[in-house]
Length: 302
Image 1 (tube, helix red, strand yellow):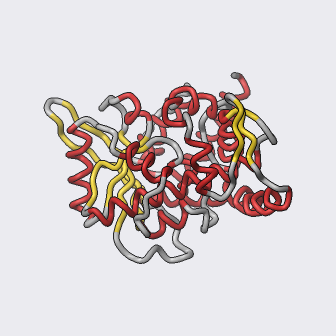
Image 2: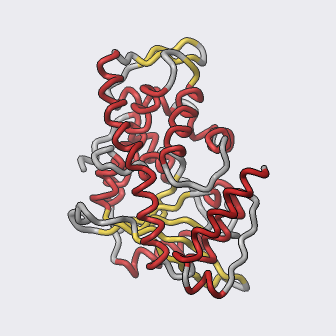
């Protein structure tokens, strides 16, 4: 990580400095210290709303040179922390900062890191200034990776939302997700301030200058370069669902409270309640096909 500062990095650093509830910062500090981490990121709907209800989302980034190439990351865990008369709940994804940075830059087959962290996040705890700079660089790389693909998937000319919409539609289709169709519109509408002006900066940082007339952008993307980017994406699109399924399988065996969390997640995003039975708690893998079938039927009816 260079720690170099350009217009994109400056914007990212300002966004990562978003204020959060002190209870969130305390939770993050406890997680970071317990894990011997380099940094902790906070993201998701609770960052946007400021609410402490539901499940808080954290990424804990560890020291080291990176996970083994064959490793299925991140490791996901569920944590609770007393806060006055209530209990804060958190889903915590843990991986090495070095792997996070490589994934953000598009060097790995993974799609989840750059697609997730081009969206808002807050850097709520760091071990030192070097860790802070490394995370800023990684998030800037995620924005660059996402913007390059957005330019390749989007129209020759259009609004920034046209490009972001094309990106999120493609990445959601490539992953094994439970969110309803049209999720890309929700992302853009609730995070309008975050995305405003981001695309030209990220394209420029990614070596794709763009012309702008009013609200319309025209990325300078030759056909050969578009082809290179789309070929890069084709492999990641093919591997998206298998990788996400492997992560779900891993989480089902390592994520304490996975059944309760999954039930909450499915109902939140689809409106379908999932009964948490003793069998499903003890055998989440065996129960998964039945839940997925119920979800398929629910979507068919909808």
